[in-house]
Amino acid sequence: MVATPASIRSQSKRMRRLFFAVLFRQIGLLWPIFSGVLIVMVASGLIVGRIEGWDVGASLYFTFVTGLTIGYGDVVPKHAIARVLALLIGLSGIVLTGLVAAVSVQALSAADRDRDRAKHD
Image (cartoon, rainbow, N blue to C red; front, side, top):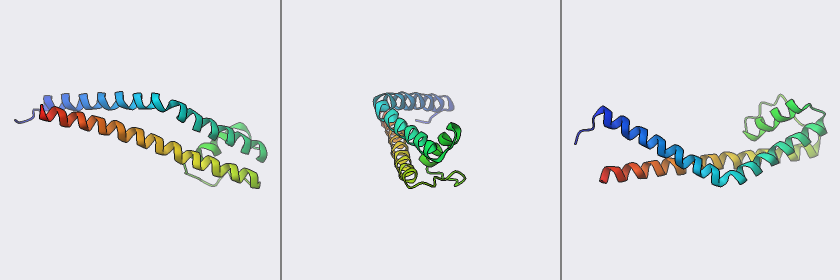
């Protein structure tokens, strides 16, 4: 059987819908963990900012640059306790990134399984 452009678009559309359905379902299940990790990151960042004398904007900027493991180096904590909290932010960011990757892979896997089932039907 030769696939027509219309059938390929239809299959692609169905896979995309399934991917997003599974993705949002998984995010809904893991939302308490996501929000907990984000709260730890933001709270730690605000504490670091308070210790270092930064404003809220600089503190949040530092939190997400550190949490996403980008680390530009333009805002750096000088106090030892702030550096320990920066480690906590970095580790939390790695956990958050891992969760996002795991949820995305799960959604892709579900879409792929559905495609394989459709081929065999």
